[in-house]
Image (tube, rainbow, N blue to C red):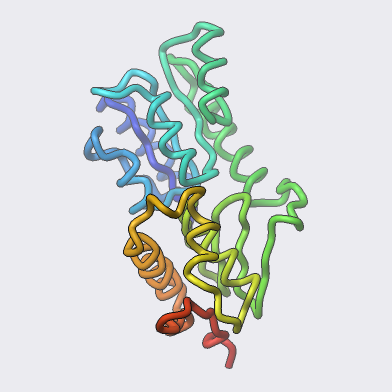
Length: 231
């Protein structure tokens, strides 16, 4: 079931959207804390975001950039601001589409379906250069999705870079120095524990796909990704 995250401060509008989209078999999550939108996004891992511009504290452009820093998930702005400049700013900040209020629910549904087909479905572009597949485990570096069997999970940008490096050198020791350089431009200012934290997060994402004990710590050397999921 496709998951949609609605970031809208007008309770009536978001409730209408939620009720309508549930009828079409979408799983809907509504923003809970307007100060923690990026954190909620990472926890929920939606396939698409509906995002308003006028929000408490930080506007939708800000949160669009924050989401884009960790994901290529499709984002549709829904706003009462109908100027051309607002639409240009939305696109420049990483949005995929823009709908002005008041809107027709059928139009919102059509745009959602179109984007989901284009990114995940039958209209998906050929991204063979961005796909890494090893024994049924597939990483799409263009969408940040890691897939195994029927399960798909969304990674952060750092987790994608980490998974990409380990998959490219499957069954080989990848040094901590190489991974630090891969994930951060200036490793001199990165706490060594930061890499360990990201390794732990990637292990948890793999566990969510029913893949356990795949990343081995080689003390004093680095890490190795092993094909523990291959029977």
